[in-house]
Structure formats: C-alpha cells, structure tokens
Length: 178
Image 1 (cartoon, rainbow, N blue to C red):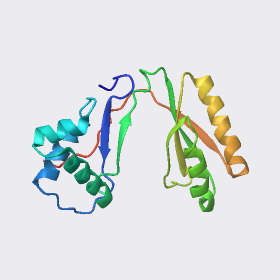
Image 2: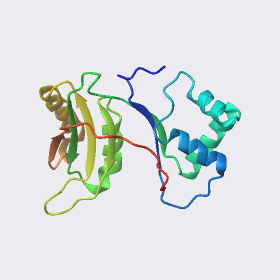
Image 3: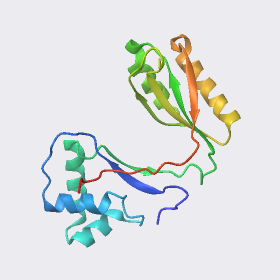
Image 4: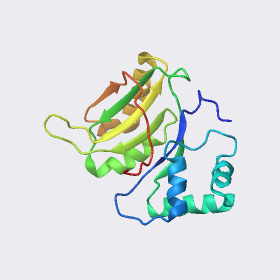
C-alpha cells in the first residue's frame, strides 16, 4: 500500500485532443483509473482482477494508450504539504526563445523542480516563457532554490518571479465526457 503522505493518488494524464477509438476494455481501464490507480501494492493486478483479464494485458493496453497519446504519463502525485514542503512556488522566467529548450532541460533536471515547461508570453504584461515548480519547507529556502536556478540560467535570465501556492488544488487525470 502506498503511503498517503507520499502520494495522494497516481494520475493518468491525457496528451492529445485527437480522437482515438478505444474498445470496451480500454474504456473500462480508463474508467477504473481516471481517479487514480488503486493505492495497493499491485495496482495492475487489481485492475486485471476487476476486469477478468491478464495483468500483462492491462499493462500492454495502458502502454498502447500512452504510445497513441491517450495517456501522457502515469505518475505518483506527492502530497507536498504532508511531506513538509509548505512553500511551493511556480517560478516564472523570461529567457530567450532560442534557448528555452536547452535551459528548460537543465532546470527540469534539478531535484527540487517537480515540473518545468514552456508557456506563451502575453506581452507587455507577462514576459515569462519558462515555468518551473519548486518545493521548499519555507519561503527562505524557496528563495535560495530560485537563486540556484538563476545561477544555472545565468545571463539568459532576463527577469523572473515566484508565485507561491496558497491552497492545494485538486489534481485529476484523464476524464471521459459523460
């Protein structure tokens, strides 16, 4: 059984808006997992038992859904607050567009960054195009982590800010329109 402090749930996120035809078993797998994988020691076994199919079939079908873009990723969603990380902030960076992939890759590799991605600028109000979520025990620690990112980005840092979380938002994965 996965510790609730470590993960609230394991989510499945869709990657594409393209229409993909799922058969009845694939739809049942999505139905079972859309609120998260079962929090048991062998979630795929649990799904297979509920559907009356082999575990290898569940895994193969989920892999196929990933390959087709129906599922982007399967990942544990940590409850950062329960783990003591109370200063969670989205750092936003204005970096040169021609360097964003290289810089994003470097920032995303940092162990205190949970996710890093590119977003469009909305000039002149919003010059930021690189976003990186950092997790810290307090705001002072978060500020030190932001300084580390700034050092890594170096002269390509044309401005940045940190937007701290004020509440935990419900995280959900793939949902079928009912």
